[in-house]
Length: 386
Image 1 (tube, one colour):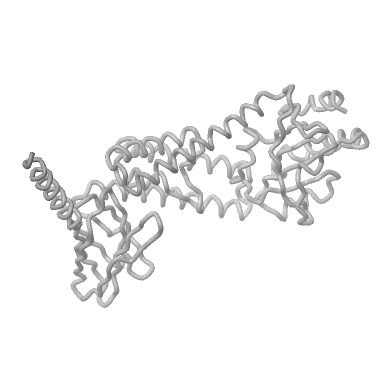
Image 2 (tube, rainbow, N blue to C red; image 1 turned 45 degrees about the vertical axis):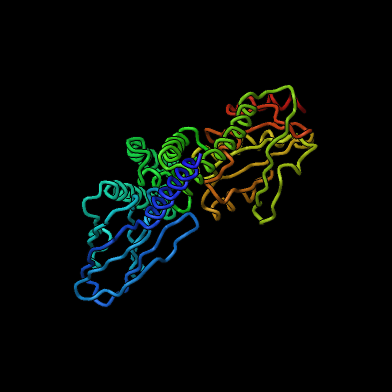
């Protein structure tokens, strides 16, 4: 009986010793930065709560530096910063990270020696920069008028599809890697490139979350990733139920319509719900498109015929050029509003709009009774409800 407490104390002591050793493990970052005599070099941690300064040193003519920090429990992200120049690298448990760079050519010269994990991370950054430059050039052409809205959307879709295809291959090849985790949270203009609420993109989050929760259980990043992924799944399932409702139109039971609140030409915001009591055509359009003049002329004919019977049009524009929209919309007799988010608007997803123009006919009680993609039958649909 006396041996049991002694054995327990022995095992407990060993566990404490092992834990203390583990807690004392460190990783080392060393190397040299050329062309940086007298510059301050900062080591920073890119954590979930933001960037945190860990250490710093002033470089001499040799550019040599060395930092030591506690080893992370999972692949973790750090950066070296010199002025406004930042270079990201990953650390996986205890290791020595050997870095070389030239301050005169910071991004292209930055290299982590003998580190496949950082090679993969650098490749993701390269692909992200390439996509960002492509989108920047596309937006410049759009602003200058050399690229219209439809062409902009098509080319943007091409860039993002190519990016996702290449990065998805790298994620699925090694979902436990720092590069995989980093890739799913990449942004362009503060927008996540992989949309966690999109079924296809969600698969990337699911793959990484599953791998990290298995190989790095109960760590801060793993727990955050699993929670983020599960919340996205719940939200997407709610949205899919809403989409099924919209796809099943016409319907017999009223279930309500997602409300919209957007500004008119004069800046006054008007809610779709404010038109309750009228028969409303909710019309999604782009004025700067070839179809627009003919489309609005046909609507105008119907509007003149039925407006005195309680017919109203709530027309939502996704035009990116506000000035063009105001000129085009100013003389229209119905309610015209614009979503300033343009191609980044969530409304097409909310209403399951896959082509422009698309409309929904809403009865006096505020329920969708018909989805309109072939506008030639709109007159017949109006006769049924007015």
